[in-house]
Length: 260
Image (tube, rainbow, N blue to C red; front, side, top):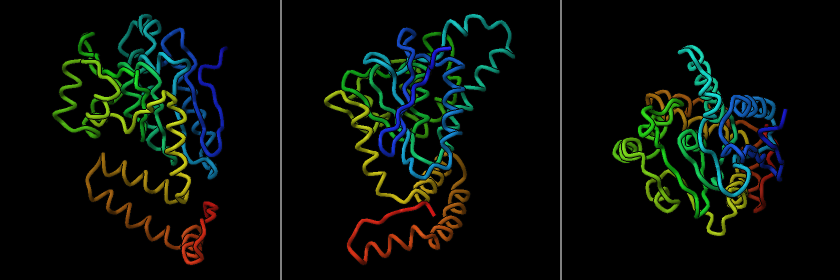
C-alpha cells in the first residue's frame, strides 16, 4: 500500500505531507490512521518541538474527505464510524503536546478547512483558497469544524463562513482570523519553520502545558483552565528546566532545556 502520509524530520520539526495529489490530498481512512499512528509514536520525544502538516504539490493542501470512499457507504452506522475516525485524528492534533502547524500550500476546502482549524498555528501561500462549502452540498461540518471555527473567529464571522460557503483568499482568511500568516514567497513549510525557530526557545514541558491550558480555556468552563494552570505552574516551577532558565538569564546565555 502506498504511503499516504510522508514524514520528514527537519531539525526539531516533524513535517507530515498528505501524499494524495491525484485525489486533491483528500482525507481517507488511511490518512487519519497514519496521523494517529505517527503522533502516538512521537509522543514523549522532547527534541520534537512542532509538527507541520501540508499537502503534496502546490495546488492542494486538502480538499476534504475521500468522496469515492464515502460514496460506498450504505448505512448510518458506517457513516458514523468514518466520522468517528476523523474526529479522533483531529482530537489527537489538539492533545499532542507540541504545537501542530498547518502549512496551507493550496486549496483547503471542506474537510481541509476542518483540518486546519484543528491545528494550533496556520500559514498559507498567497494563492491558497479556503472555504467551508458543506451547506452548498446539502450537509454540514461533520468533524467539529463549526465548533472550532466559532472558537477561533467568533460567532458572526463563523456564521458568515458556514452559511454562505464562500471561498476566501489568503488575505481574506488572514483578515477573518482563520490563519496566522501568509508566506509571501509561497514557501509555506519555510514560513512554518520560522514559527518553529521561535517555539524552540521555549522549554518543552512549559510548551506542552501552555498548549493544554489554552485548549482548555477555548473549550470548557474557565474554572477548569484556571485549575489546570495553577496546578501545572507549581509543577513547572520545580523542574530542572526552570532552574536552568533562571541560571541562563543570570549568566546572560541561552538556556539548554532537557525536558526535565
